[in-house]
Every structure is written in C-alpha cells, then in structure tokens.
Image (cartoon, rainbow over all chains, first blue to last red; front, side, top):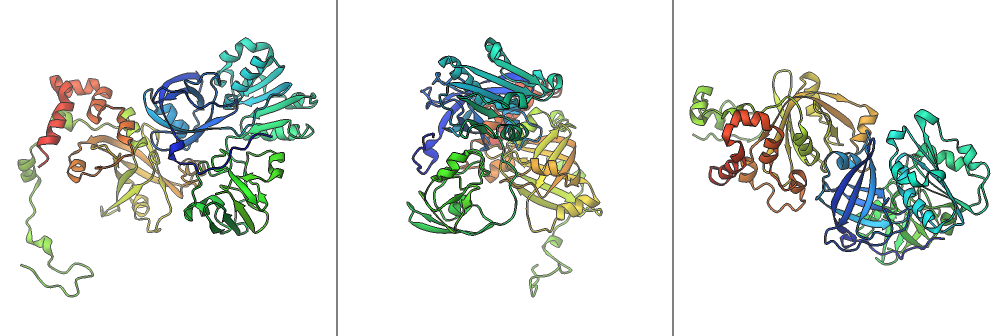
Length: 324
Length: 232
C-alpha cells in the first residue's frame, strides 16, 4: 500500500518557480524539456512513476511524467508528444516554449506507486515510455530482473531508444509498422511469481493489458492513463458533503461534480485535469463510502475507501465527510 | 441646435446629432493624415508567419467584424484563455464558439457574406495583430473537441481562410492604458524579452531591408519615440 500524504489545502505556495533549460528533439513528434529551479536550488525528490503539473507561460496546466534521473536533484525532465488533436498544451511546448522561459511546476505527485519488487515486467506504448524509463533505471540500479515491451507507431517515433540501448537484452521493441501489434498474450499469459507489471500508454493498450492480465495476482498490475476512460454521461444522485475542516455542508447537485460544488462554496480544494487522471484533487474521506469514478486508484485502494478524487468521484450513499 | 426627443428611444428620428456635421472625402482625409511610409504600406502578408502564430497563441481577446450581404457591419468581442484561437496552418485559423445568447449575429453574417475582420490582443502587448479573411462555420466533432475549454467541446467553430495579416502599432492600446496593472506575464511569454517590432523585423529581414533601407535597425527605437512623443 503506498503512503497517503496527509491532505492539506494546496495553494500557490506549493508551486515551484522554474525555468526551461533545454528543449531536445528525442524522436519524431517528441521533445524532452529540461527544467531547473529558478533560484538554482535543489528540487523536491520524487520516485519513478511520478509526474509534475507544468503550468505553461499561457497559464495552461498539463501533467507530464518525470523521465529524468531520480538522483539528479538539479533538474526535472519530461517528454512531450506533439498531438494533432492537442488541446493546446503539447502544441504550445513544441511550437512556442523556448529555453529561458519561466514556468511554474506543481508536484511532483505519485499516482503510479512504484515499489521495490523481486522482478518487473514493464509495458510501454508511445509516450507512455516516460514514467517507465526511471523505473527501468531503478531496476537496473537494484540489479533485479526486468523486461520491457515497448511499442510505438514507427521506430522513428519511439523516444529514448538511445537511452535504452545499453540494456538491449532486456528490451523488446514493437514498432507497429514493422512488427505489428505488441503480442500481449505472449507477455501476459503466464505470470511469473514475484513479477510486478507496470504499464503506461494509450487507452487501447491499457485496456488490452487490463483484460490480458485479469488472471494476475491482485496488486501485481499497475498502470497509468493519460486521459480518462469514457464515463457514462448524464446526471447522478445528489450528494451531501460535510467539510470537516471548513465546517461547512455542501449539497452537490446531480449534474455537478463534488469538486465544482466545493469550489463554488468557497472550500479550498485544488483541481487540475477534472477528469480523474492527475490526482491533484486527492482528498481524504473521513466518513461515508465514496463511489470511485477515477482512473488512478487500484482495486485495493478503492476498497480501502480512505481517499477520493472529487473531480469525478461521488458517493455510494447520500453523505460523505471529507477532510477539507 | 438641440431638439427634444420624447421619448428618447426607438429608431432614429429625422434629425440626430450626426446631422450637425459635414462629411469630407478621402482627398481631404489624405490632406490631414498624409500617406503611409512604404514599409507600412507593404506590411500586409498573405499568411500567418511564425511571430503572428505565436501572437495568436498568447492572445486572450479578439474583436471579430463581419458584414451581411448589404455590407451592414457587426462587431463582436471574443475572450478566452490564451491559445483558444488555433492556427491550423499558415493560411487557416479556427475560432471556437462558446455558449452565448444565441443571437449569432456573426454566424448570420458569415453565412451570407464570408468576409471577416479580426483584431487580436495580447495582455501587456501594445501592438495589435490584424487578420482579414473569409470564413465559414463548421461542426466537425474532432475540431470542436480540439477547441474545447473546461472539459467541454466548443459549440461550433469558425474557420477563417486568411487573406491578409498585419501588425498595428500600439498607440491605441497605450492611450487607453489598456493593460496597466496586468500581471499575467503574457507579453514576456510572447516576445521572450524582445519587442513586437524587433521580432517582426527579425522574421521579415529581407523585405524590411528593402522597404526601410538603413532605418531597419532603428525601427524599434523610432517606434518607441513615436509612442512617447506622438500620441496626440
């Protein structure tokens, strides 16, 4: 079980003032961005799998996995894919961000929950390689067995292959135009005892991994999504939220998220993605049973019911008591 | 002469304040204003260059002018976080439509007359970017999604085929003190510590050298001088 950081209201003070040190072409459609503290100081430590929220000079905030070295406290590195249908974040990074520009960073946050295990199977699709890369380095450092299945559209679009090159014997590459789809059945059919699976990539890959690993031990499979899974639209049941610290009770109508209703009531909860992916609005549940609709928590964590993401999640009953 | 109009509402009566003034022709206008310098006269480009694209990506506000088939004009302000208007390629813009009062004057006009005039503003930046072109309306779901905000797709999108692009000097914004006290830092993000004119010169060095000659290097300083001394 990963540690739950004590919930506290997050404010502007939690933002790091940083500066873009470098943009580097990594593959077709992918650049890496290196960031350093504006005052040159050490950056908060992080674990493999963590992500930051990057607030671009236009004020747009986007989450990116950290893909640099956990040992290097002087800089953060993220990999950014240019997406044609981009809502403006990756497009801005590729077309407009320049070295020297000031940016703000929130986090790092860790939704992946990477843990020391006897052995690893990593599965990455496309830009999903970014959170996996530091995990690979950690596995190498600890000298435990690991294998990586890495798929992409074409070899030229697969970032960081050069950094993986020294570990060639552990890496299976699947550029789709040459090798076709990743043979997930071969990878997932026979789970080895003690091997944990970490996966990140597009929704189609993760759905396939989820289905293909259904017979794995619970808790042995962890994945991270970039975008929310499709959720049924429409109105839901009204919820009454008791805010333990703010001493307020907020009625959340069926057509409004808990987060929006709390914001409207002036209760300090900070959200970002608003679709149950980034984890920024994580809130401790003191009483009541949350109805988890996020794409972050594992089955175990959902069952624990001690925290929730109010941007999407609601309540099984009529009432929730939250530590806000 | 003042007439008492009672009640002072409804359509204009036979005589209004405008009738107290005599219109002049363009020759007289030129007598007063003079003619533009060659580099101003030739500043229009038929495409969105890199700096114009960057400008639009940092713009939070634009004014959209359209006309119906009779040339009756309408002007509509559009505001959003920066980057809401997207440059699809150097000859194409896409503008999101957010929920509004459904009067849809711009759409009514565009469906009769494609001509569209746009003035883009970036908080903190004195100069204005002007784009004129021809527009049509689309409901392409992928584009509406791309133009979405706050998790909701745009209601409709206006696609503009760019006809002309040009910068306009900052005197209007300076006189209005439009961005006084603005702390968003978008001007810095747009110009990276440089200026509108310096970046325009940098992008169009060849043409500017031809139209401005030796003065190209001092354009920025000249403009600043005008901004300080020739506002009125």
